[in-house]
Length: 597
Image (tube, rainbow, N blue to C red; front, side, top):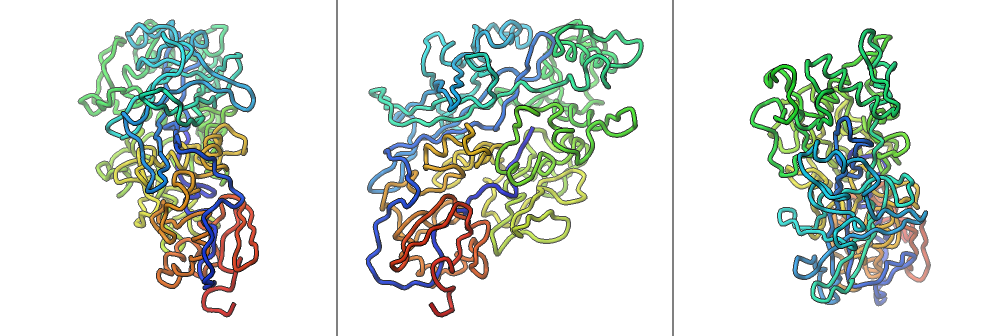
């Protein structure tokens, strides 16, 4: 699926500097910090919440086979704005968190899952468990389905030090029967002693069943047209195409899957999303797991080294059409490749900053064979360095922020075989041209890198806040187009505008930050601060290189110094106004350093 975290118009991490750097030496009393054109919502508490992947897929029907059940994840942290010190990230005992349905701007609301999918009719055959209607595989419910209907709890995850609802069984069908792959849940922070709601945020819990096999596997189509084979004539196109997949699997692999429906694909092909205990692949090199589906001949684990992701991507990546051309052409459009199977032409799960910048799945992941691990990773290609020289590990050796965000305006990756953005700083492809493995680039400058040996979705940054909490979910990094998209709701609620959470006042109480601090995210100074605007010249005089890192060597502004919102401020008695996206330079307000005012 889509992914990843880098691109042309994307993580605007240093992208809302509100002042120039150098010039004015006015000694007038600095004004108090107050918002200009940005009105950060008031309140003592902030709920920062995110989905972990940016999209969770589920099967549209479960009677034949299942790749993924209804299963979703919400991570959340609560920040208390302290009036006499730094913000406090609350722990269990200090706060409780719940999730509940909430209508979006179009009136779509999703409160239950029972009656919206046949999953519960087949859960026993697939997973060997008995689930109540609406109950997920980890025991969670949608709020209206729960034994005690109402807000449901998020649990504390001690390993990741945040609150998590792991396995919400939400479907893409809202309560009116319409399709909405981007429903909202309201995450509420409550006083554990009184139950009083302290704050809330509305987060997208993305889910889609637009995972199609029918484009190729409907009877008569490319993968179901071999003469002499009794292909399915089921009336339901979804059932027909799924049955044809099992027929073809039995034909080619000697199995008897048609006789053992419903089939859980992960019972043979190891799939990390369904490894709920996190135990890893079974103790053999194949990535196959033993399961309840007896094949017609013994499994030979030594000759088929494919996990679920590997077999799907590498096998399909090698298929040719009637003209002898790849069914999924290398560097083909997202519509002709990924969206043939993943959500999809209607869902458009790649929808964030990367899409806005003209990037697609190929830009980060490479082609089908690369994703399928057909080629060994080059040095630095694995997330932890332990798998360099081997086939990429599904769900682990993935693109990284630093693969395109390789540094700042004066210290970033250059050299051959790089696809460089027009801004001259970022890359537009996460791997080097000519690298068939599409190994993610490991940049030497760590300004925008994830935590060591971790992916973006597991990393934390400023103040131990999850990276996804400030930048948005994987594949949906802010801003998401259009501005009214459900993905943007929480950013508006926390800071008053769309885009990366950039307003210091979102989490910091007024006048609690040192005026000239450079301890913000990725080394940032204060944003939207009148006192910083008044005194920023002192930074130029003592630490000029820090200004150049984002405003450029000549201080004329770069993509890293773009205003994240419309801004207005006063400089030496006159008003300066800029619109969102303006690259902040010294000369917006005064002459450049070293020249006469």
